[in-house]
Length: 383
Image 1 (cartoon, helix red, strand yellow):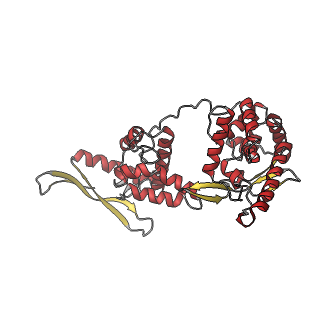
Image 2: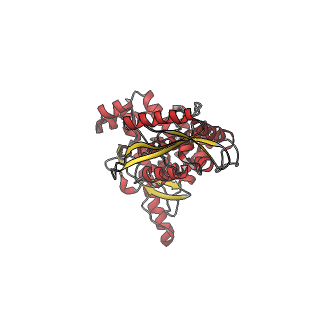
């Protein structure tokens, strides 16, 4: 039977200790493991003996690990970012920066639910360090991203046997207020296209109205477009990563897709192709043929930020509601829904997934995508 003894420390204070407490055998070496329990009271030692005994018997005991939170985060990022795109790595790393600042040097096992809630409250009050005035509040979306990544990191540490509990488990994340006016009506989309059709890159704005992501439009090459078959194949994207434009594949298999083109968009793409041929002839050696669809007058592919700014300029000129460029995808999806296009077909069209049941048990066939294309053409056809 384990003996609990009272001991006097050098400073005169007392502690209660139980030495040689068996916590099972090391799964690797097979050697017996023992720990010492030290508490201020005998009752606390007895309670800890019961707790450890239960965990050992149930196979849930976790040996004490004194690593810091920063180590937990580093291990998580190494695992979570394996074979992920650069922009995903940047997103995950950035989301965990507030946790590093506030908790990084703490022993991971010492972090409590209250500590994580304090982190949440600090972020909501003064946590901004990038992209604005330092010391101002962060939005609920940013806070939720941090809490989500932090919880995943602690979960991994628990799975690895380093920790016995995830302190984020019962922390409530801030709610995200519903945004109003984030999509255009059919009339507004038509007004935007009436202005955009007069732009040199009219085809690009039509592709945006088709629901393609900014990176997908900027990443299109002429080899991805078959004007004879009237199709566009989405197979890459040009995105910003830490201020650099990089080309990457779609982030999931659903992102790879071939969509039918309507008459208006086919004609717009043909016109843009012909224009680029003329521009190359006029520019001569100054022309930098890149093979991209969306370029400037010298063949240089436009940057994602430039594309966003041009979208805002055209939208302002059209006098429509102010929305984000990405909200044009929401507009497309909403208009397709209003036209009666089924959810799983809309998901296939936009390159993302539906709920598990629809993703697993329903499938979008080529003729279904043709129906979606026909519906969209009817909505935003010739202005």
